[in-house]
Length: 99
Ligand SMILES: [Zn+2]
Image (cartoon, rainbow, N blue to C red; front, side, top):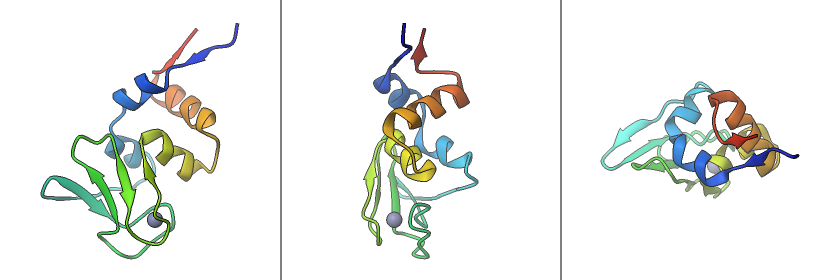
């Protein structure tokens, strides 16, 4: 049997700032948001990369214009597929994949 990946569980369990911390990326609190340089296109605009306070969504207002969930973020940082990103997160944080 193939292990089933629960994308929703992963998205709900892992805040984006925790995922970013693994890559040595910290953001500044700015009102109801977290902001920083975009780690995906290596931007220098300190306000281009925005994470909403519930930590479930992010968006780059700089060059790459990417955004999404924590899964999309890890996918972009690891340059892998969505399924691979889910597996990486599940393994790293011990969640998501049921046997
Ligand atoms: Zn960007």
